[in-house]
Image 1 (cartoon, rainbow, N blue to C red):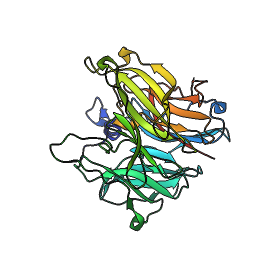
Image 2: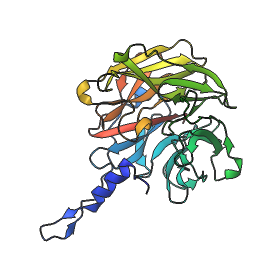
Image 3: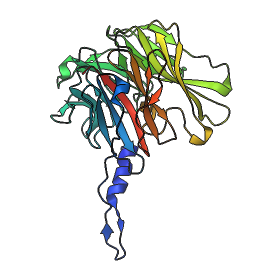
Image 4: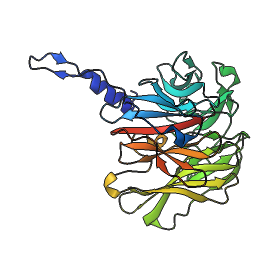
Length: 355
């Protein structure tokens, strides 16, 4: 039997209701979509940011779109998205992963306002959060057959055309042999695609790998793990618009204590893995009980994107196991500012677009 995602399980509990004094079922009111507070559009400059917001109390969520250029915001895809969502480079469409009875988790593409959803991928794999190629023509996603420990990157046109599906990587893990990077060991992490077609992803949360379109390793960053009291994990690499840099999230924990995250940093490095620079940091209190990867749907929690002009980065910072918000920082490391602030929500998977 398929285990229901946490968001779905919580929603079913909410919809089930409870028994009244006469023993009859008294359903709870329908779940309320978490509202989007007023945000400072100037923090983003121009362009759009799409992200997923999940309500802590109900597990009910939606995709929210902030249009900094127009000075507007709205929500769509109520309780639809399992992984994602990724806004297309032109800001007109959203790609996301949702459940399908026949082929498990598949990628769908719809207009940014939730209309005209199209079932894009149909191969019998469990796909994770999708990404777009920079020309908006294709989606890239990690997938694997049910039960497989190794995932691979696939590309396909952003329309229902499985005949042009391409397998981009071919990782191998031999039984009884320790797993070594590069490899996709979890499909909950988004693959970032540069303007040159180069892939970047986090391998086992222990290193950032840069892989060519043919699947060969071209660069990597592996943080030192000499100090077990400051054990690093890395997540969510994202290419800059010009493909010259990668931003990613790095956390530290005490591996001999309780693994709780004690610090959180936005790092940037060159495409060849050199010149790793810390742009912003945030201390995480032990009382927050934040673990590497967070709680809502695992590694998809920690994510980051560049605004289209390359001047700003948008990312989420966890505050507790179930609460986190979006922040913005300038590409030179200045101006770290909180963007969203509604209580009792988890904001994740920010995705940026040009218009």
